[in-house]
Image 1 (tube, rainbow, N blue to C red):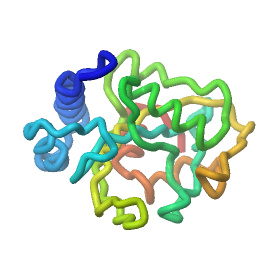
Image 2 (cartoon, helix red, strand yellow):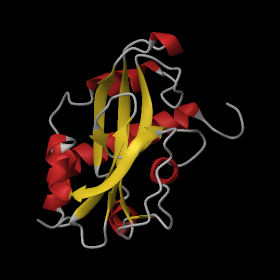
Image 3 (cartoon, rainbow, N blue to C red):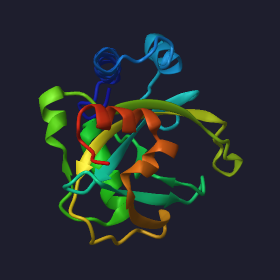
Length: 194
């Protein structure tokens, strides 16, 4: 333990989020099996050098009406996705999502949606495989992405082109091809509009 960060307490926090999120949204048993196994094994899931996976945080940046979402074109994956990246201890998961959202889009005055304060839950938790990057010494591995709703006024996009190829406001329905479970949860809660 260094700098006041406790990896065991972080694992406990993530396990609690998993349990409560899965109950709240009816997530099927086994969906988070790799992450749960890593928690049980005592892996340092907070560290980006931990394999087979580690924690990331991302932001679904919605306009005030919930009709538009700000997406970035990911450099490595060459896809339109929500902004996000590696968790950096000792940040909170919400702060990590906000930091990544700002770094990749340049949008000012981003705020976590009030739903999170009331529920104390992320809107989605998704584990997905990331291709190997031999030039960085990284094998194929899992990103266990803890996802938050962030609100912003449409406009004011100034993406960091060292991080992303671009950023654009798109129709929220585009999440269907990116994060369908998150879109289902957003719709269930009435946080987005058709």
